[in-house]
Image 1: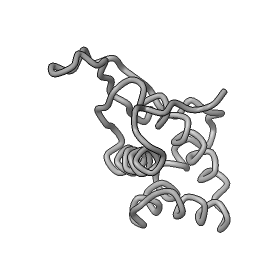
Image 2: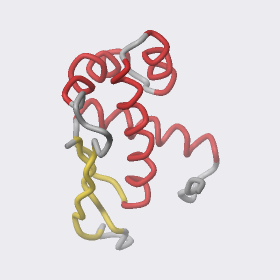
Image 3: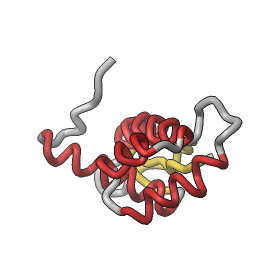
Image 4: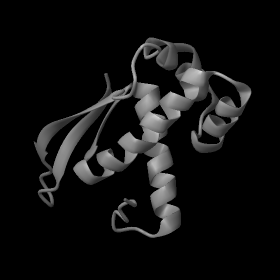
Length: 112
């Protein structure tokens, strides 16, 4: 199983997903399209699982992906310990209707 192209080129897609993941961990909830949310969810779950290890290598992997250092600090100090006893399923996708301009399915992606 691969990934979705999301209608943009590679550089744009990677930057967009990094921005969405950073926003998810910073705000703990984001509004986005369903396709983007599914992609962000898989990345965020892997980052939280890495953060639960708490070692230096995991922190460096997170710093390589997340744009803001304070968000990485929040991930390791606040978010990861909250899910210490949980074996995955750190995010929730809730449908939020359709976007007005193009009727794209919108969702709310949030940390559980």
